[in-house]
Picture (cartoon, rainbow, N blue to C red):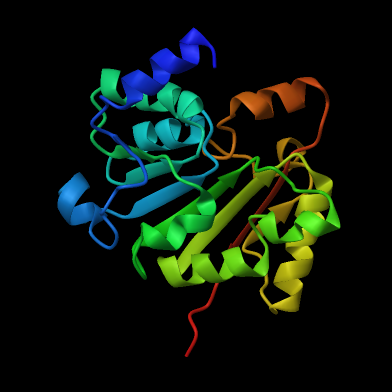
Length: 217
């Protein structure tokens, strides 16, 4: 492991906005960390936390939590939030598979999935963040009418997600296979992660789809 990574791991352990596997805020994030009743938005696979931080800057009346297992990546977003004294931002260093251990039913208002690993081979389908198991997690965690947003450069993952929603008889709220050439592009959707900026420079199209998951009766 490089000296830079070791330094970052040591530093995030001191940040008041970074929590790791022993975090015990399930169902109590607003009461015990944010100290308010504002809506909570998650960014899954947040990497350096560009979306988490940018959204938090634009919406001080909402709370944001970036989730990633890579501590050296989380460091950047967490450090920015600490330096700018942003009290509506937190980061959680966990595997997304364990999401249900850290959040309660109806605790989340929105979920952003920004450029996840597409897990392209069929044997890795269960790891895709729009696989049935994850969609069920989101359904439980989201408030009624809560929204899931997916941005990806991977056409296969976009098509796969469309197929999953069709199987569940869910009509997307919004969707496009070329975000930057569509009428959907706005101030929020034009926020770019490091990977996204790279993909755009390479001439790749960016897919976007948002949807709601109805509560079970």
